Image (cartoon, rainbow, N blue to C red; front, top):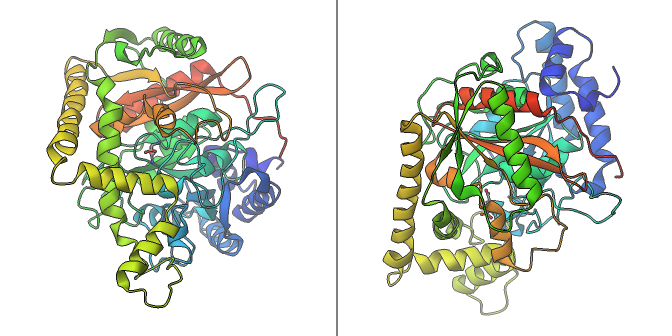
Length: 494
Ligand code: GLN
């Protein structure tokens, strides 16, 4: 078979089952593609021996005819997932040299299902960022370019390495995590599909924590069908995570009928932002028309507290991060700063944390400790929690009124140039304007590539679903994907 790396998960699964290819062949093809794509900065720790071992084991399982859907499929794993014996640094210097003695539940489930880990993927440090520029490894690069320009564009963040790797066919699919948009935004900027499941669907055990009440793992894939397949393999109850839901995981793939007749799609007026590019506005109305043509009913809705979502997120996420990151002190694992004569334990903590964390992480730790401090707790942290409850209630009210899914743009712009926004944190934070509400409310959301802008860059739309109804959400996304017929690939330059 030719072009093995271009296969989707579903195509590869079917080809493996029919004996048209082997997992070893697929894995070798991906490993070769990774070797040739160093310029994308997507893969930060390569694991070819592990990959080939797992591929051989997968081929044995396939030959025995007892292989689940992900068996033999080469995937990339975001650096935020602890992988046993393999570097897991969360894109940070402070975890340099850390080799986890255990496997995260989600990557472990993929492994047990027979998926083949090719390596660890680049990301913003501790998943804080929207451009993959806060990474200790350096930035990842978007395989897409604007028109004839050679300017390097961001693949988005924080799961920028995952997005670049899937879009450039370095792996068939990848894991991501999403605290405020880190699966959906990079997916939209690279023309792939990204699903953030309902909070509690995927176990957080073994995933390096950023903001625990918001963090959620999910699949980043070439198609909605692949998101259904890989998503199901990642989800499920885990007694090791007390926030993981004890609910059965349906066969999402079987729910992809494309039939959305009678579904009610909400179009929230608060997502029509001033200064939003006309092309995104147009894409949004075209997407709505596509769903209508497929038999859905469109309804204008209001989510009145939307405009408070970003400020609330940028209080709550840093607050939780400041607490979660307190454990990185140079004592137990990772980096420890070199000490001078006379330095005590306090100097060791201070130097280690000052040298081990990058500027964005330090900013978040400072903001987080400030909003949690005795004098400001009520003014900021408690206020943000109240706003969060109102945002959640906005969604509950529209779902109670019969809305099945909500359609919005995924991002306020197409991929932007590396270096353009990194010096202005507030401008960077605005990238999350359409995605953070979903994390604050704990809902499932999916980004689907729906078109190209004037410069030939991919744009995506977001669908937001009812809690625990990822199957229904995926089916609506599938209908949108079919109607949009997005098949473009980035021209290869790397
Ligand atoms: N860009 C957002 C942030 O910097 C979201 C990151 C994420 O979802 N991990 O916090």
